[in-house]
Length: 221
Image (cartoon, rainbow, N blue to C red; front, top):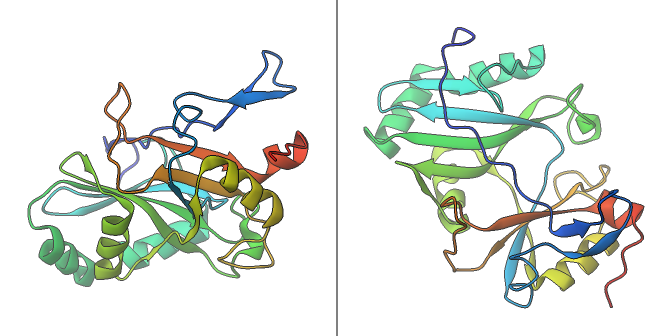
């Protein structure tokens, strides 16, 4: 991969579930549409504190990119990713699983010297959180199934319930399920078995961070 050659789809920014005041000093409620959908059942996957990684399969070859086409990797993480994805064996597996479909795998690189990920793992790691195939966003069950076929880890489902229950859960369960020594960054929430999309054609998701709950002393009774 030569820097500047990649033109892969960037992962959208996941909106915060909380609505803040204009000075960002107080939580004043939940953002829409999450407030209107708050009592539906959501599942939550652990939000991993790392760096965004994109794996692209164009039907013929595998390419690796960061959050943007200009992003650069921490050196040990790059070596690790190359050893996993840029091999004849993995290319064969991708060909068997996807054929000539256009595939984008979104994941998180984590571990030493990557954000605050040193207590996650002693060595660099990669974990899948989303997959697009021919522009279609797979649901959580399919993401996990495809990740397993590829021999890749996927973010664990650690919560099911409404959004208010999710806030309580994060507030009382601060430890990561990946490594209990690491504080859990939060949850990424998506609706169970409901393909509801926003005006941009993106599946509705939101993030709920432990640091927001702790900083703003949020208490949802």
